[in-house]
Length: 228
Image (cartoon, rainbow, N blue to C red; front, side, top):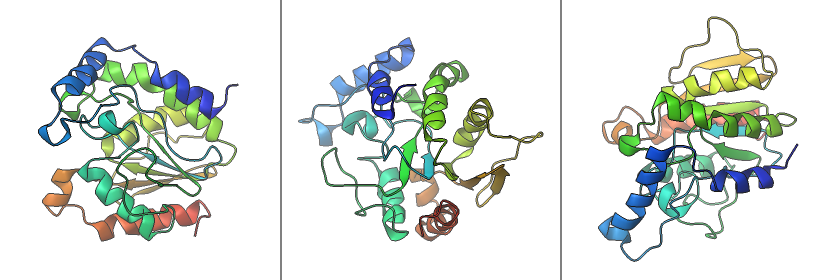
């Protein structure tokens, strides 16, 4: 079996979904005015964090002008601003901000992964695109399995996409499958899942999700992972 570093290198070269390839590359040319002088990553975004992580954070997909620009999960967009503040507050991120690769950020015992690795139009990958991308997540979680104790899942899409992958990787997923909800906890043998509303700009701006709410669920997840 290849290492996580080898897997990450393979992920970056993927061109399996024509619609996503076209979109991520178009965005890198059109750009957002605030980033007009930057060179966009415009490739699939690999996982981020140590290979012996006991906690995984599962999101949705890279954002067009966030990770698709910076090349690192949740980096360079408002969602990441909230998430990294929470990660720093609970003690698993070395700093409360994440702006670019090489900014000094390190995660302790925590790895960020995603069901879809390319930025999708309107932040909505198709079921076919999700399923095409599934093999990357399945292999990544299999590599993490010896140390993984907990998963912090952001949003219903991530939760629904993750459960079949965990079943394929050998964890006992109950039937019927546990439903997503904010603060929901599910036990899959020795693995514990924690659901959290997605840290999207919409959820935060409407007050549906606050930093304290994220920190409460994240603290429970890090505790289950043995990180605090």
